[in-house]
Amino acid sequence: MIILELLSAVFLILGLFFFFASAIGLLRFPDTLCRMHALAKADNLALGCIILGVILRQTDLLLVAKLVLIWVITLLSSATGGFLLAQRIRRKSLQTSE
Image 1 (cartoon, rainbow, N blue to C red):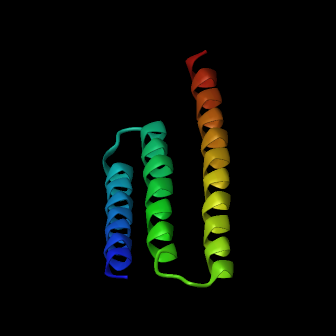
Image 2 (image 1 turned 90 degrees about the vertical axis):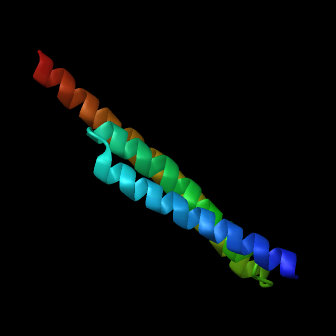
């Protein structure tokens, strides 16, 4: 029991660290594509760590399934949104260079 709580705390702290790192990347990186990369990668990893930390403390399987579903939907929407945004930025940069 103590090992699960300790492991849960480690994942929660890791998640907070990755959220903090993505916020710093958003503020410090020079262009939109670098900022987008920082947000997409670190936020997905942070959310996964936090959800895993919360799952380790749960006994209700329905709640665990809902948390996993939230993370999967977030992964899919982040990847799709990032791709569409990068595609739009690329098209815009090609138009301005011509």
